[in-house]
Image 1 (cartoon, rainbow, N blue to C red):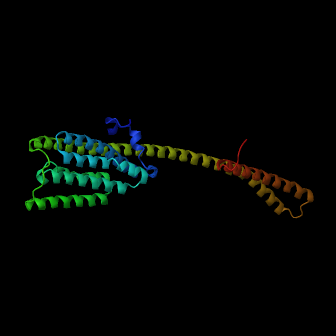
Image 2 (image 1 turned 90 degrees about the horizontal axis):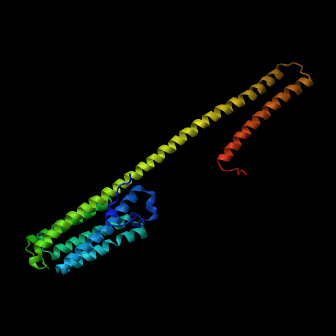
Length: 295
């Protein structure tokens, strides 16, 4: 049974999203899995960002709306870049940079670590671990850690961060931020689980094809052994005749011309029989190798 696609819940055809995969990724299942994950995250993450930017604009949080909108539009470009370049390392670093920039900018205009966007910075390492290679994930985890340390140092130095929204809207913004973070992480987990299920399904399909191929090879090996047994049996009889007549000729002290001709004829007949059998075997092999065209 094919697993239900998370992307289909958002009304996006799975085939359309897979169309962003670079052709080179189809040959490597792990590359294809990570590519699908980055592509779907880019499109769905961009859609969620646009929805939240609309909310921020509606409550007159202009800077927050602009940051989220720009970040969302930038994330949605990643699938196109992957389609053109096939470079998942580049796609992963772009996603990490966009997420870190967006969340850090929201902290800068939303009250720093005491604002509504501080928890989003902690989501960057999680996204990095799921979306890119271990090396890339460690790099962006370190950068995220350094960013949080930087905000903490400024906070301890009593640096006042901007709050570019009406204080009366702060509760609504914090609630929306917490709900958004929950949706964001849930979406990320669902996308990862979806790609894992698809990769597992493809692995099972490949294993089934491999098992079928092994059965065919086993059957072909059995047929080959049977064929060799038949060929060996068919070659044994003429070889026995040849050896027998050759031995008989050797034992004759003064063979007559008639004896030599008769026994040589038997040897020749048996030799021709062997030659015919070997020729048939070579013809069968040539047909199997496609070297002979039958009409």
